[in-house]
Image 1 (tube, rainbow, N blue to C red):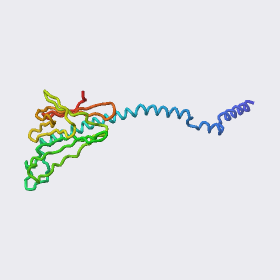
Image 2 (tube, one colour):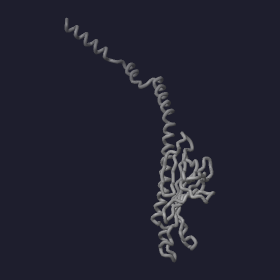
Image 3 (tube, rainbow, N blue to C red):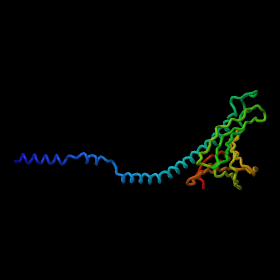
Image 4 (cartoon, rainbow, N blue to C red):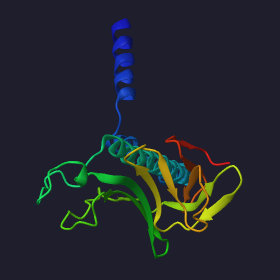
Length: 228
């Protein structure tokens, strides 16, 4: 009798542990429609928060990179002037490759072209010392650096201990003499004033309005800071 009871119990357990094919098919379903809608809603909410933050971060990086590139160009012009880098090392044309072929200065020229929004760029350009005696070569400028479309030049300000002057952006020039390597700040009218500092204010075309100021001192200092 106990053996029959044990057999019945084992048979019952085996039957209970089995699952019908219908039930197996039911439990293999991964997600319900409601669950999928909840996940999609969460992902959309996260995207709404993160995408604007990513755009702000990206534009801020563009601002920082442009500021760094402009400082690098200014230091390149300054170092070339101090080192007496020539306009064209391969040219002789009746002159020996001596001081006649050196650049009298190395300049950083800021340019803007029309459009919506306008396009900004800067370029390191040498000025030959002997341009009155052709056929000295046309100065070969370094490749222009074009600003990202997210960055523009808000203004250029020249100043000294007495005056502050807002300079038109196009063709603004910082010139480094090959004699002293000091900066000649090329503000327009009034040209008779001895400008001691130029401030180039960079900003974002769109976004949170972050700004960066690249500051050039007549004595040769080059720095960047957040604009006031």
